[in-house]
Length: 130
Image (cartoon, rainbow, N blue to C red; front, top):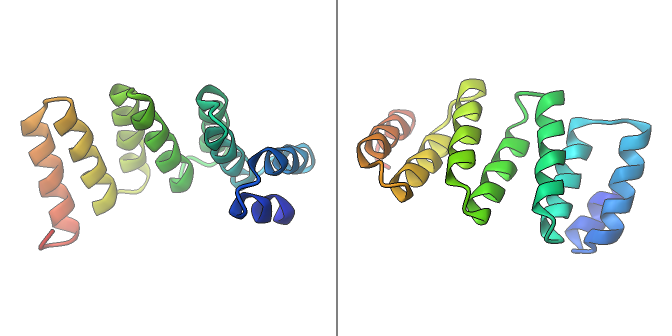
């Protein structure tokens, strides 16, 4: 796993993917699935990335990194409904100002202004002044 993480930091994604898959074969950890999803995404394979990130979430529903990566992937792909669902699921696991803010942005892009404002209000409740 450490080699794969090093390769990821150096943007050697194909080689990192091979090492993450080997790590998963030995120990299918949440962290390895999250990292695998990230390198698959960076290689332009969003469906595989989403599947890996979903596996990470299934293994550990409180894995905020996997939720955030999956939500960002959906936004990049233009699937705002899936992004909304992902961030709402994350809020159920671990509410935060950042997640409420991200959801507010998504809702705003979808033209759901009132809901967007409500999410911003919730974000401000965590950190007054934003």
